[in-house]
Length: 235
Image 1 (spheres, one colour):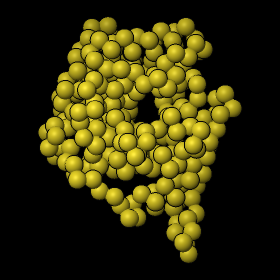
Image 2 (tube, rainbow, N blue to C red):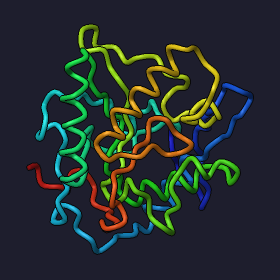
Image 3 (spheres, rainbow, N blue to C red):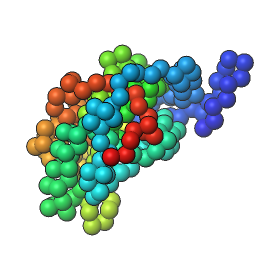
């Protein structure tokens, strides 16, 4: 993808997303990037001071595949400069307990995303068609990812290191992503439901449109943040 500003116009690559079920949308990444970062909105809240912690420093056995640090995501372009994942401490400690419980079964967690700066949520919203806005957070309200209380993840087999099959891909904007989706194979649904049960035991709730998205309890009590990863102190 390339983004070029010429005489107040933006020339960008267009990515097609959502191939299954004939549900597709096209996103103009360049317009979203320029709209948010020029001028760049800053929030006053310092989430690092509010207790944001890096997951792998709390439990090095957690595996990461931070999709928004690369191009393998629904916008097709990197949005984070670093492949790191953060949560508020209570949520992070609960996630570690999930990881420890799953390890006894030969399973583990593969984290796609945790805390997400507000400006990225704004980019998601601007780049997504209105009829699919339920798949992304509303920047006016701020998302649970912005508060450091939401995590995107899946299950991984510890022996092979491979993710378990699920009914949909991560960040797939179709009904196959719904936690209650009845299609797919029996094994895919069993894996999805096993992940949900493990997370719910530690106080997480699945998002009704995404099997991979879990919110930690009391998320409303945490502030919305806009810190970039490189501005968060390692601890």
